[in-house]
Every structure is written in C-alpha cells, then in structure tokens.
Length: 290
Image 1: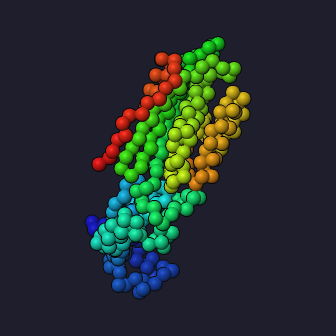
Image 2: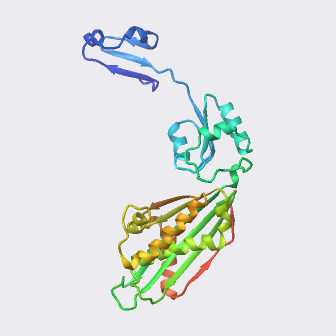
Image 3: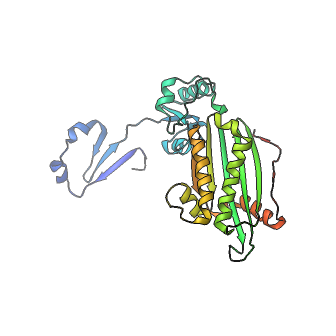
C-alpha cells in the first residue's frame, strides 16, 4: 500500500463488484482482490523527456518538469523516450542541428510566423527581455512635475548576454506627465532602442518578452483594456504599432505583468533620470555565460 505504483480503490461492500458496469475479469492480470478493496498495479513505464530547445535544455524525468521548460517557449523542441540512453543520443544530435524534420514539426509548441531555416543551429536564437518603469513626482498634480522613465534591455544570444540601461527624463510638454505617461515612455524607449541599434536581430529567429508593473499599461497593450485617455493615446498607438511591426517580421512577442519588487532595476533607472533631470543610457561589458 505504500508503493506509489499501486492505486487502491476502496469499496464499502463487496456487492459493488457484482453491480459494476465493467468486468473485473478483464483486469484480473493487473488486480488483487481483498474483502474491502481492489488494488490496481500500475504498469506504466518510466519516461525520459529530452528538451533540446527550451528555457533549460536537458533531460527530465517527469512531464511536469519538461512542460515548465517548453510551454510557451517559441520554437520549443523536445521528445520523450523510454530509456535514458536514447534520450541522451537525441539531445546530442539535436544540439548539433541534426534533429529530424518530423520531430521538429510535432514537438514545436509555439511557432513563429517566420519559419526557422533548417541550417540555423539551436544556439542561434535571440531572446530579448525588456523591463520598463516610470514615475512622476507630483503625479500630474503640479504645473511642472518631475517625471522620468527607465528601461532595462537584455539580449541573450548563444552564451552571451548584453545589457542596456536606459534613463529618460521627461521634459515639460503640453501633456500631463503622470505616472502612466512615464510608464508608457519607458516601454517606448526600450522598443525604440531595439529598432535603432538591434534591428538586425529582428531578421533572425527572435523572442521578445516585455515586463512591467503597470497593470494599466500591460492590459491596454495586450488589448484587454481600451486606451481612451487623450494624454496616453499617442504613446499607446506608437507602442502598439512598433510591436505590430515586430510581429510582422516574425518576432514572437509576449507582454507580462509583474510585481514592483520584480522590477527594481527599471525603477532605479527611472529615479536616476528624475534625480539628475537628464536622459542617458549605459551598456556594461557584454557578459559571457559559462
């Protein structure tokens, strides 16, 4: 009874066996009968899931662990096996770019509208993370509020990670520089940076993930909310237009709401812009992962 490969189905009366709609005779090879229960012996075999393309490529022993690596991941590539040796062999071949065409078709969960050329190796995908934030000291209540935005751009390619820190001071204009205005500005500045200095990436297999702690901005950009504010509409249209252009190029774009505590880097940049009342960006030395 303590074996996890055994399922016990309890009955109060033995009479339930006779009235059951299914035949126990068919299950006789797999069951043990007692006075109060039927014990079914599981016959399933252990499976190994080889993830060639996912968040963390490798071999996993449960579907749940495998799913965490591939679900929602653009171009995910994986396959299940009944023994570890075959899964390891598949993983080696896949990482060399020799996985079969049929496996790629059947095991792709999220497909980009821009097909991946066969000759592209798995490590040639680009992954971009964009975190944005913004704030307004006075939040539109003063005549000349101090407002600023921040954006953190991280570009992952092969085993390298490039970071760009963007600070944007919002100067006086004919619109009210509210918190929402500053949030939109942060997102827009990050997207502009991609088009200005990283547009070549958009011609390659690429996934862009956008993160922000403004629920209003996230839900408007994803279409869950309608943007009716004249103060925000211009920024909204520009942001949505740039995302649309990326999708037309075949880029997979995901927009996700996160908590403020998860967005500290972008928040720091927005405050630096407000403190120094100027706009600038920095790019640390490219980090190479081991």
